[in-house]
Length: 125
Image (tube, rainbow, N blue to C red):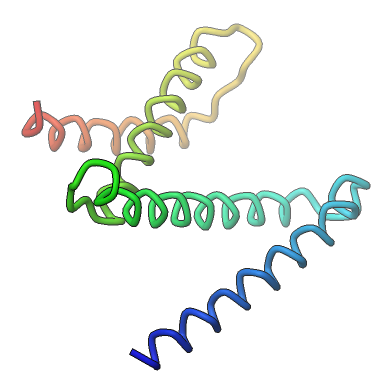
């Protein structure tokens, strides 16, 4: 039990440090001092951490709210489905636009994975 408390405190300190560091990064990012490719990786990492934190929070609160036993993985899956739905809607709009040029290789990769996903999703319908 004591090890768990110590670990929680260590993680809490890490999170507090990360918050401080993120806040310090805001100004140089807004000033355009960070390369676009670095910003893409940074945003992806932030999204993964944000989604994980949200899922962990939802999982911890679930027994209090609905007396359920939902896991963090289940909440993450639900969040990915929500995000994928929104992204698919945006892609549909892009495909319909005349001023958007899509790369054939990327479209082919997306098509392939989407076909595979559709087959797997049929089991859930």
